[in-house]
Length: 121
Image 1 (spheres, helix red, strand yellow):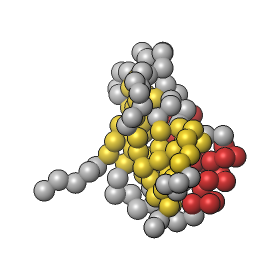
Image 2: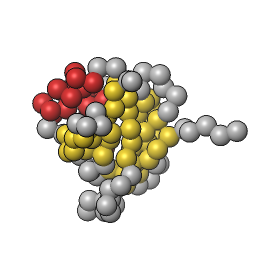
Image 3: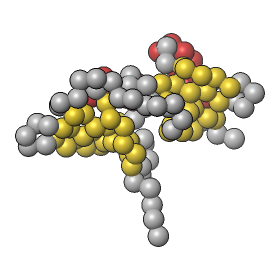
């Protein structure tokens, strides 16, 4: 038996990314791990349930943006307050694609990763 535990996104600015996920998706930092030599930091973000984490990885020697290719991979989150979430994300300026006929939209984080926002149906 298997259970999903976390997904990893590599990020250039860990503080900026943690702030984004806190502000955009109400996620909180569940733990931070730092390499003893300072070569990397891991910040694990989770929702209020806390059963699945988004691992944000910062690498000290990385200076250039990550190549996300066609950016066809994304996270999806569900919200009970779709209209409120949409308004918040509009104000943040992070909506990157809307599909009104399907009733969903995507936001992008500071590194360009897409997150699909879907209502509870």
